Structure formats: structure tokens, C-alpha cells
Length: 228
Image 1 (cartoon, rainbow, N blue to C red):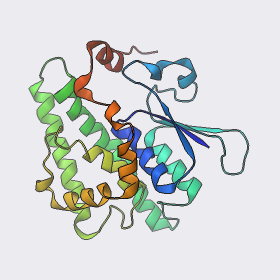
Image 2 (tube, one colour):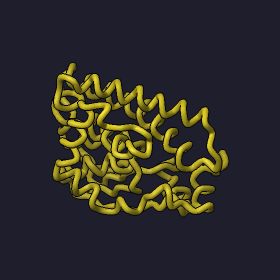
Image 3 (cartoon, one colour):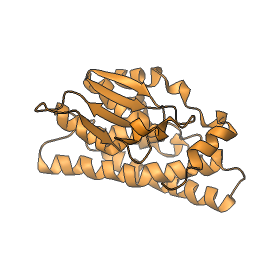
Image 4 (cartoon, rainbow, N blue to C red):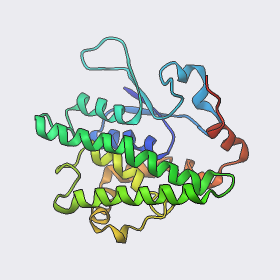
């Protein structure tokens, strides 16, 4: 049994997609980030960066004590290696998937996240920041669109690279991006959206996360945490 500590953010939905695709037995443990549940000592014990998602695998390969994993990219990699799915085993195929997984966790996610932050959460508009991150998000969309010009999915076959990127493309409207400007992404996006596992992942609990409904208290919890 896998426990997924989850809130319906783009990063939270990445392992949710993987769990639905693989059919691994799992239980969702909600962590309400607007109420500060990510700062509870019992959560910090295995997710020290106070971020979701995280998981605990109570039946790891080879047996033994449960395995805890934090950071969404690491969760995808762990689940791929556990199941032997959505990550090639040959050198070139694996490298291809891994580099695009890291491209997402180091580029698309942070830049689109800052785009959303300054458009939605900032207490007052910061034009330079909005312009900076909107442009960088568009640049990254362009990189992905070019990559998808001659292949169905990011690394050929559907993989954890696609599962990493898709949830960050879902809020494209909020990030001032237009999929019609990126026809290869638009085609890829529709193909993933229509997968049964994607529909299951997004049908359960995703309404719980709405950045435009944040209270001042929740905003302070999310963005006002001091260094520990």
C-alpha cells in the first residue's frame, strides 16, 4: 500500500497521474496547504521541505521498512522504478526521459509557478515580474512545442516526462499562454487529457485547490513561512 500525501496542485497531481496509470494500490492522504497542515511535525518527519506531494510505500521492493519519498520528480522516478513502467531501461531511452523530467522540475514548473504567483497571489501587481515570468513561460512552451513536432509524446512513448509536464500546462490560461499558439503542445495536451487515467486523477479532489479563493490567512501560511 502506498500513501500519497496530496493536495491538488500541479506538483501534487504528477504522482496522482502515475498512480492512476499503474493501478498501484494506494490511499490519498489530504494535506491542506492553505491550513498549514504541511508544517505538522509528523509530515515534516518525512517531507522536510514542507511541500506536497510525498509518499510512504509500505510494501517496497525487496521488503523491509517503509520507504518515504518527497519531491514530485523523485516520486515519479520511484514509482517508475517500482513498477517497471513509463521509464525505459535502455541507456538512450532512459536518458531521454530523465532529461525532460529534470527540465520540468528545474524549469517549466518553477517559471510557470512564479508566473502564477505574480498574477494571482501577489498583494499588488509587479509589472516587471509578471512580464518576466510570462515571457519565460512562453519560451519554455516554445521549447516543448518544438520537441513535440515529430513525436507523439515527449520521449516517444508516454512516460513520466509527460506526467511531469502535463499538470503544469493545465493552467495555461491563468499563465497567459494560448495553446493555439503551440499546435504541437495542443495536440499532445488533448491526447493526455483524454487518457482514462488522467480523467480519473482530475475527477477526484481537484476542486479543493483554487488559488483565486485563498483567504489572507491561507496566503500568509503559504507564502509567509519563516526559515527554520
